[in-house]
Length: 418
Image 1 (tube, rainbow, N blue to C red):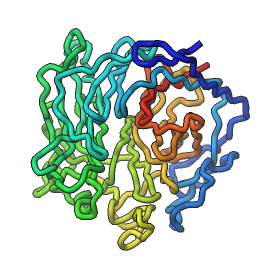
Image 2: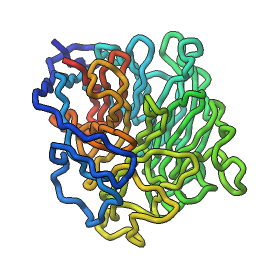
Image 3: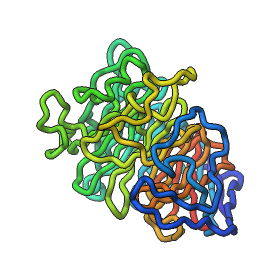
């Protein structure tokens, strides 16, 4: 029996069984050609009318057929006392280091008990979508105890920007020692508190990938296309915050050498495919048009020139373009929105049918999207934990073969084999 813990105190049982006995949808082997029509037996999971009348660039780019998990699994709430958690990363021994938007860092035990706030972090701007955001551990954490995180850094005149910091988790786990900011995605924006991006992860070479946002406003969104701006980018930096040698714009005059890809709106999802090693991201579109992209160095992902969404007002985007030469098409898009925030590929063996599937936390959609990907195409989609009616901010795989997620509702979830 699983228990719901509130702080350090146990409470009521709250376990949601998700035992599925239906026959799964079977997808034909998908080719890499975008013209391939994927045959899935299930109806698409999205039944609401789209916000736009745009047509996808290729078959299967949106509203792919559904799949269904047949392995019995359960969704368990381990804790419901977190305050707007945003990111999580697994510590040795199966515990979780969790960021809270207001600027707190906490540790959750395997049974869901939550520590007191960890001290020593720099101040954050937690207005709007700002705060303490994504977090990851140094690959050598067992020996050096280094932690890296992204946050909205406050500046003069109500300004802020996306920043990356690092510090050592003390031996007694009560504070971060010698915290230092190593990277700032300039320029500072003084008129808004939205679209900071905020995910961070290490690659196999020991370098950091970090996502930024274009700060939302019409005056700043164009900087996604500006190679001399840190807004609306994915950057690749060293653990000292320096551009990685070999970055695609390292030798281009007028371009920031840390930029890896550009033309992004607000990237809150980053993950490496466990087999291919490819970098994938998901980002918010405007009204409709959330995207899943396969990231290649130096490529332009189009925002705000092309989009499968419309303005929040209901007006078309300027130019109303969904395709343009020299700009990448999303592998998949959602309309209405998924609101993708935090994702992971599943590499465990506990639920074999999930192997190499992608799981993305959905905010306004209030579910975790499971995507089956073959040949770099989405061939099946499923909604996980939709009955929780929660905004899933981040999802990660634990070493025990389960998925762990945090929500805007303050909950820490475990989703694992029953």
